[in-house]
Length: 165
Ligand SMILES: [Zn+2]
Image (cartoon, helix red, strand yellow):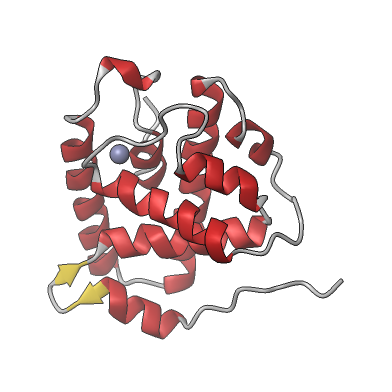
């Protein structure tokens, strides 16, 4: 079977992420998720259940990192075409246990953002800009967490900032 290989236009992607002195970190996360989910061939139904939080909460309301991650999952679910299941984490993405699901979302977000970061070949200054933006977004997002969430960490935020508490 022919594999659907995602070949993003990296130069264009970079222009959409870095606009002069402004960095769209949310776009960076969105692109990373779309690309990673497709590459891993995550089943569309599971991506959809993550996006719609069918099995329980996955994202913190009003958190920009969470919203970009969620949009990645939901758009992939709409347009994606799974061709392989290289990632074993997809089973945990469909778990009813909040902790298992959250850990899987965190790991995928971590892996996918790291992969895109490498591909974009950013300068040290650009990397710093992006990291600072993500750290600020995470801090803001974390302040919106409540007890009902099921985990003490935000999966998308910790994944995107490579945080391990
Ligand atoms: Zn978050």
